[in-house]
Every structure is written in structure tokens, then in C-alpha cells.
Length: 128
Image (cartoon, rainbow, N blue to C red; front, side, top):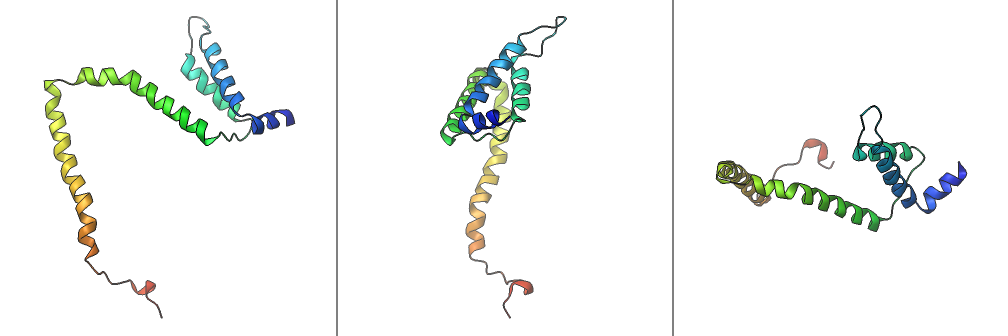
């Protein structure tokens, strides 16, 4: 177990790649015509490997992996989003703008109004 802890502290990326590889392999296995799938298996394997210790990934690696995650979500759902835009959705877009515009303006205007108000301090916050 000390070897595993040393690898976790020295190269945690090894376990990240190991979880993806094992999850992909196990996700393709069919038992009685049923398979969990590569995504679910990768998450399950990552959860199990995560029980071995505390992993500290470098911040640059975290940023790169998060950027790849956001890219893949946009790459997958972007075409569906733009395909759903039509004349029928204009009413929903207009309703969203009518709700967001006043809320945004009040959010920006309210602090300017509150700066001029001098509220008295509660008794517990006043000095002796």
C-alpha cells in the first residue's frame, strides 16, 4: 500500500488515465446482452480508484481537462441547440429577455441607490 501512496503523490495522472482505460474496457463488456456503457463504467472505476487516497492534480492539468470537458459538451449539444432555433422559439426568447432585462438593470442600479442611504448601525455593532 505504501507503493500506491507514493505513486499517488508522485504521479496522480497515472490513476486518471488508468480509470479512463479500465472504464472504457469494462464498459464494452456485455453480460447477457447488457452493458453499463463506457461513460458510466469510467465514473464507477474513477470512484473506486479515488478511494485509494487523496489526489492532487496540478492546476494546469485541471484547467486543460475542464476546458476539454466544456468543449466536448458544446461540441455535442451545440448543433442540437442551433437546430432547435426557429420562429416558434422566438416567443420564448422574447419572454426570457423581458424577464432578464429588468432583473439585470435592477441588479446594476440598486447598489448605486443604496450608496446614498446612511443606515444606522444596530445597537450590538455600535461601540461603547
